[in-house]
Amino acid sequence: MQKLGIYILATIISFIGGIYAFVFTFNLLGYSLSNGDIGFLVVWISPAFLITIPLYLLVINEIDEKFNKLKFILYPLCCMLLFILPSFVIVLFLGGAQFFLPESISIYSLFITAGLIFGTCNWIIKKLFSKNDLNKN
Image (cartoon, rainbow, N blue to C red; front, side, top):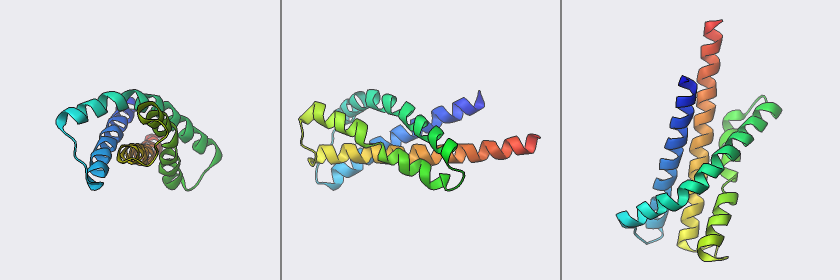
């Protein structure tokens, strides 16, 4: 149960980190968001993010099955590369095929950052629990 709680916490942290990355990137490109815009963003991004989480977990399980080393790089890198799927769908749904608008670039940064955080958190969690499992035996 404790392990599930930590995975849920990692998911929440990666979502919040992604939202911050969106706002930071949008501001960096010379635009600003109101509090209402951020609420709208959270409402529209949440379903895509919830769909992305199983994909992140699938990729992490595939890495576990096929690789024994370099997981600290592979987890975040592969989760970051998954940004293409939700970003592409959201950009097409909201604005057509305009992939280099400030909003589009900010959505890319959201999912890249969320993937980085999610992959890194999962690697840390697996390291912590593998050490705890060794200590119990």
